[in-house]
Length: 269
Length: 269
DNA sequence: TATTCCATCCCCATTTCTTGGTATGTTTTG
DNA sequence: CAAAACATACCAAGAAATGGGGATGGAATA
Image (tube, rainbow over all chains, first blue to last red; front, side, top):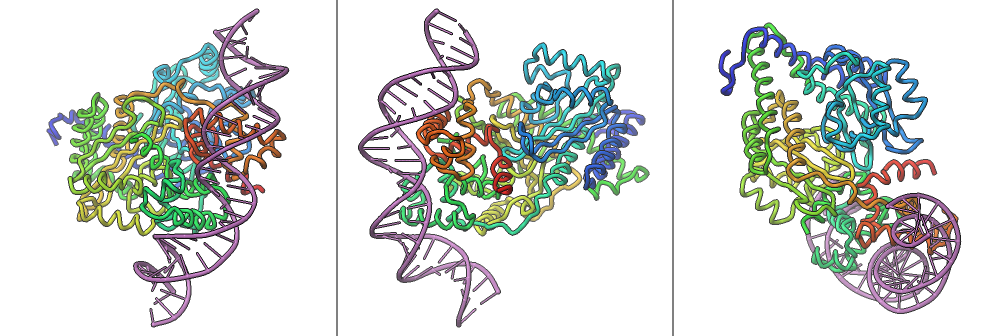
């Protein structure tokens, strides 16, 4: 084996551990990927949690962040004491981990949470109560779909234990896949035959989303203003909506235009 | 991942490949993590790209409008032909990969892009032109921070090559870390500079997003139409936009309203 | 306590959008 | 090939949105 890309691989036990980690990762990934129901997902995460060296997990997926009657999914195996406190006092709205999720693109250790958000006294009190209820340090994988959903998947150890640091990257992948599965489960967004706009219609909608008027779009696309109006008219009829706001939203929901399309252009101007 | 799952300890070449992959992953992660400038990041991604078995990479990171300096970052090593076409014809606004980023929580293969968004003829044409310019299949890792930024990191192979599937999970991690580094380089946006709408303003924007006119919103909220117009006016000024389309998009990007807010209401009415 | 922000209401001039038509030539597709 | 879809262009009436002025009372906050 020896020298790989300039790095010594190390001794035999190290190799064995590496192989074990990778095989473990592949195993867990396939298990979590195949989860097609809430109970499947819970079982898969339970398995992953213990085999990665954690004590607890919690996955939450909210289609409507901050609202009440939205589709949401919460699976966890937290100690009863903590679960009761958390749900009973609606601590979710004040959870610093949850807040930190909005500030990170990838997984983070709870011990480093102050690098992401400032902690208030209430936050520290909450973390302390958590420790008293069996919740120690943790690693949380956040994911966001602007305008659609927020989710997080946390792997947690007991108060007297330390995070299995060599497993964090695997936890990151497993967590991400678990969230994708969660989205599949609650979303169940069937790829139905949606009304697709023609290319020209899409362009007009995009420029409209960027805040341009029909006259401006006409100049940009080098066509008549009447033609632009016609394209937008037909596009509205396709979606059966009567305003540009709704038209833009429909096009965005269908993935015909994206935030990046709009904001990137804004940034470059 | 099924192809990975089949690999088992006991097969010497398989073990070697596994160890190589892990060592490679650890190696690349530390290289990409330590990137502290645009050129660092470019070099790190260049290394990662070739060692993962890809031919090209492209990372883009876009901050939301309103943030001051360095609102976006783009590093890539695409062939000149494609880069010139892409920039010259402003193909970014039509890029289906970019659009698909808004619909996925984790990395996706370009060949499966139709599972995420519908492809128009123009999209297919663009992909075809890409292939003629040396851009084949790819794997893109998207990340979103509501109200702050969108980013994506793509790893691409030549048209005649196939994606190194066993490396995709490592690509996912490397891509995520690269985006985190990009965020570090560009600089996190101060959250207080973000315009926040008042509750009433937000309500008006939401009903506007649902396709209601000012007069209708007035009836719904039981206030004067003039008041509704005033709320929307102030909201537009906060975001410095001049159309309801843009206003709705800004509010949605900031997480003040969501697709669920709009479409669930549509569904339930 | 003073100031700022919020919610509410009003007016007016101008621009833009929506809706209803019609029309011609090209491209795609069954 | 024929039918359908697309891109282009035009007209006209009425509805809606935008941008510019104001004004009041209350709540929060510094």
